[in-house]
Image (spheres, helix red, strand yellow):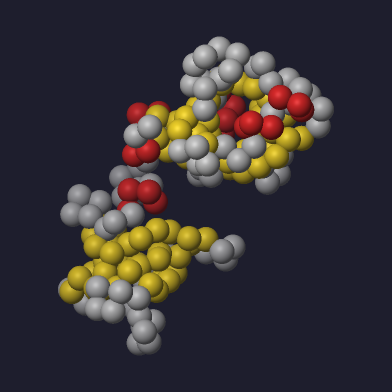
Length: 181
């Protein structure tokens, strides 16, 4: 599978009830996309591949029903309408083709597009963005510093992040003393 071709929009965490519903942790800023999902591709991190639907032989799973809960989504897939059939789906990532992603307004960007960007502070490249984390309070840029190969976390807020240039692949930051040490 070409991982860069797909975007994660959810993770199946467990079975719910006897009728084959699964709990999905939403990994997208557009949870409404589940309303008209229709079909889904499921990626197994453990097997490093798209799952094949054993009933159809295809890598697509037809969505029968979607129920929105406060903090998650419940999904039932066709041919998996029984709790005993959902075991192979637990832990899988729901992915969409990159061409199916929502278009953003100018000046907005997807976090995954930022990974690997150069980090610029006071006009000088100081490192590279490894990933974006969230431990509950806010998003944090995880940066690998060029100088000492150390990882640092910078809050993704306007006080510190001054500009994200997707064309030049650079994130311009302005940090306070001691933040990078």
